[in-house]
Image 1 (cartoon, rainbow, N blue to C red):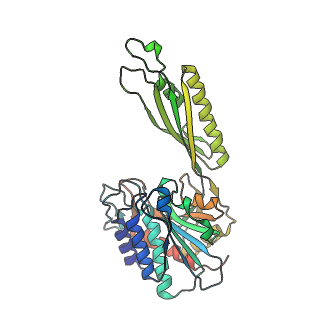
Image 2 (cartoon, rainbow, N blue to C red):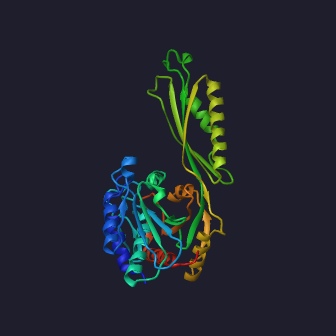
Image 3 (tube, rainbow, N blue to C red):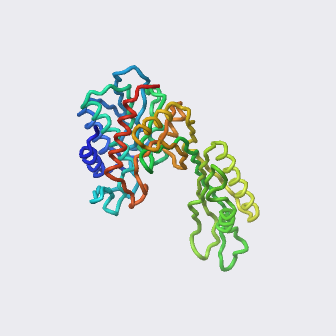
Amino acid sequence: MVNTERIIRNFTNMVALDSPSFDERLVCNYIKDYLKGIGIDANEDNAGEKIGGTTGNLIAFVDGTVDAEPILFSSHMDTVEPSHGKKAVIHDDGTITSAGDTVLGSDDLAGVVSILEALTVIKENNLPHRPLELVFTVSEETHGGGVSVLDYKKLKSKQAYVFDLDGEVGTAASSAPTILTYTVKFIGKSAHAGFASHLGVHAIKAAAEAVCQIPCGSVRDGVNANVGIIEGGKATNIVPDLCTITGEIRAFDDAQSDVEYQNVVDICTGVAEKYGAKVEFEYAKHIRAFNVEDSNPVVKRFKEVCGKMGLSGECVPTFGGSDNNVLAEYGIDGIVVSTAMNNCHSVDEYTTVESLTKAAELALKLMLTTEP
């Protein structure tokens, strides 16, 4: 019952609106006006004020026509850079790309349009449905900035479908990692490199040796790590007195992120002592791991609906984070549903007309379910 022409129109209209993290105003207004047009009032919270953005999370509750527990449907309004001046280009084979100089924004406007279309079909046809809770978040790309400041006392749902995963429609992520980032400062001593290098303490050499020792890539099963930035030095004739490295750790077991971070601390401390340097550490856990078992109703429902649609219904782990990580911290069991966005976070991002239609159909059928 979904309308492909309307789906593509809404998608291309929203893609054309700039919506970088911390400035999702245009997309927020579009969604709010669209929902009002189909009889759903949405309220914006004060997330923007809390995180330094222009826009709040958009929240709505749709009363059900059947007696069932409410379910939360969510997607995010922001896109990564480069995003200014995005445009959706629809190719003859149904592929949708950007013009090539920006991201497309199917991450996560594909999720947004899927939810909007499902709601439209329900309203148009007066279909019986369970109570629905809608949350369109801001600044998801900054480690769930918007969802982290939601007032969870106002939410009723204990189960959620977050439409925000790459890959084939009919798959979902039922587990995702803790994401921990750290910064290590190696503090040495400056000296003239030509006349008195022996008086200096070379911070870059110390940092470089530490980086060589810090495990990167797949450290062990369920743990990935990386050192992504190294910065230091002022001039070629100065022994550098400061060098900073920045890295991240992703682990499906939250405790394992602590173990791996301690390994980084031990390595850097040992190397700093070897060179006579000092070392300072900072770290932050942006989101924490979640895991939803196959026996959970939110997974069983997804698999059953996918089976009826001829989709795989496969639930897999992902090393990517999403708003669902934060929802899980507040006792909401959710999975991250694929909307067939591909090559995300690059100018090669694409989706297809067929997959957008299929994702909207999936959202609709999940909303229409009435079993626990």
